[in-house]
Image (cartoon, one colour):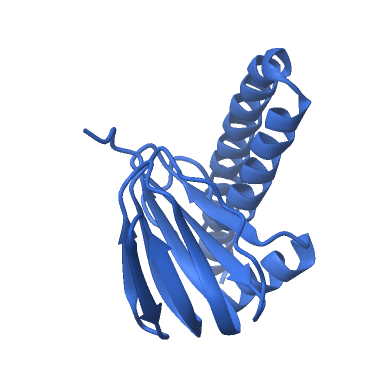
Length: 177
């Protein structure tokens, strides 16, 4: 009986040690992320407050969804849409990697799309809503499930939005030609 109790205690101690190592690893990742964010904040202070606030918004949104350095992330659409609604902004970034950026863009029916041309190629996936999309000289109707591509630096807007619009937005961070 003494051997069984010692063996159970040893197993319990091993489980606690494993748990503590996992917590330590997670805390190290959080510390690394915080140091990276502080470095960015110091650099951005030189550029100006509006840009600093944008970087903070990107960092906070990314932190809730993904721990830096992880090779996989799962995003719950309902949670992202709730965060977007709570933010009071039309766009919520949720992934900011060296090769890809993603976000959700929402416009109410009848709203005016005020975005400017971007420096990166962009893809929109229409989650819900209907209206028209203009990119350069092209103008087309869109529906839920459609995918729209816009090359970098091309003027584009959603217009004649007849139903509330929700879009998944993907930016390629590759330098365009």
